[in-house]
Image (cartoon, rainbow, N blue to C red; front, side, top):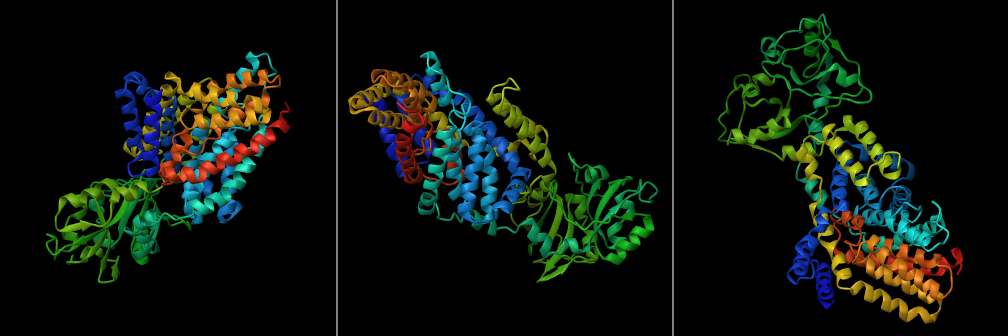
Length: 612
């Protein structure tokens, strides 16, 4: 019994110190329990096969798709239009929205869905994400107290009541308690977040300054000022012609930045945009849409010569789903120096286009074919993201500025946002109702696979990159600690001793003791395991005092669910840890006072809602 308590105490010290990553501390804790024979290897590794862990992984992918498709940005924009940019108002709205969702969806699922949206809100409102993500996690737990299905401990106490022959709880029996809990929690969190979570995290801002954004490059080189969008009708002379025969750059001094199909422009709901670069072998087809850059008079001549149509649109915007742009610096050792661009066969050799040159502060976009490359020239190149990345491998005489594939990962696949929204909605319905008879973890896995198959990520690798493995390992490694405490009898001894010592002091003191005991156990056991352990004790305590058990059982479910003082006490706490760059001490500074305040409020209010 002493061994797991000592191991847990040492682990807590390392968590608080924060010098070693939390997932490594958790793994060391797990190994210590194996080496001391407290747990068998199978018991110790059971956390990694737990459905909650699998669901967390799937939810990371779903959340990543919501972010990658720009759905999070769209939703956050609508929220900001309604509430403005006041950080306190945003915090309150985030908590309310999260709590309402958490009343019908698991708190883990709620946080995974809301996390990318809240990060987007923080970025656009210039509020530190650190100030919003911890309240997000806590609000999901508070929302679980609004309905019967909001959190597993609610179902545990419902079962305890029915087995004892007491009247069961209705779907909204929890609503008064949940509203009080959410109100007290929100009021308490507002000052706590200002005091302890207001320090801005500038690391992301610093990283962003190291590389120009795609929008900055487009504006700097004025690409859209000379951009024309042309449509190839069936009777155009361009139909069936190859790019090499057209010789567009030499004859007209124009550059085709990309080619699209008409269907990708007009499909209103599910857009399937195929962006293609143009090379010497490209054959033009009817209904192709060309994005052409160059002198307007030459564009007009090109349109007249080949019977093309100019598409009337005010949104002359370049998208970077498949095709991107980057800057390339020519070094003195470059092999192509002194050659005109028309003689470099740049497009043929490297499958990329030179669309502009920056030379000693001057931007050159016209008649590029006749420009001689010089040392120090900065070329704006365009092509698929993969081909741009490969440019750095072909020659030692130039350098690619920035990280093209990293820049590509930041481009939202907005044409897939409708699909992501539909998949997310189906997942929420499946998790919140019994209409689709599948387990929540199955619903999440189906949604995550659907996001990948429907193209909400550029690649499967991008989907895997959204998984926060530190949080996954942290929770999976700490889950078996509850087995160790139950197996050695440490948790039972603690609960029985504390509750029995308070029984003679009256029902309210005993109520406080049950809440406190449950809260302490919830730091080390899962909330469901804690509720299962404490519910019979609460029933026996009420029977011993000959009073109704409702207040005591609600103290159990509240104590099990309102566990905020540790990052590994609930999956939502762990989910936001890395994204918010929180330390263990952040949870102590904010979560522990919140847990105490809610505990005091509940001990006072529960006897009024459920009289003894």
